[in-house]
Image 1 (tube, helix red, strand yellow):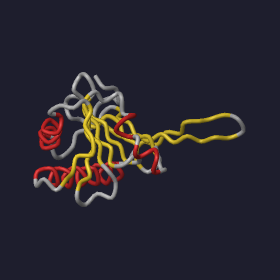
Image 2 (cartoon, rainbow, N blue to C red):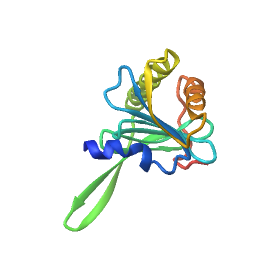
Image 3 (cartoon, rainbow, N blue to C red):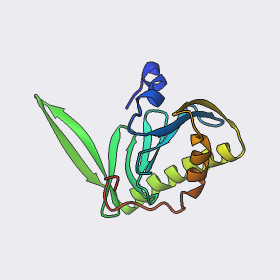
Image 4 (spheres, helix red, strand yellow):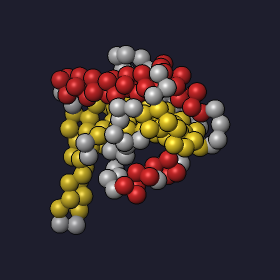
Length: 160
């Protein structure tokens, strides 16, 4: 994921798989937060460019990018994939999360979502940009408030 300032500035513009999206500066977050929706209604949250969480239309976590790891849902559990490069080849190494790792990961995500929800509800935010120029901010606020606790993990990482 992006680490340079110029890449972070382009996040709203480059998240083209999210048909409706908005970028916010939210009190308590060091980096801008981008939230958006794909055409079929599934949502994604970018806490900066290095913490990305993608949900299916049933609000189940299906995929994430966190701490330089790709994370995906597999039969209701989480697995991380890490690229390992050696002598001209790339391997994807899979690690199935333990129950404790899953608990910690979900707990951290729930805390981030709660903090975001509180910032949006108390209007401690500033909108940086919206694509398209529509009522997407209200849709985002409603969607964030509807994410259940405890978070559910999808059966598969696909959107559908």
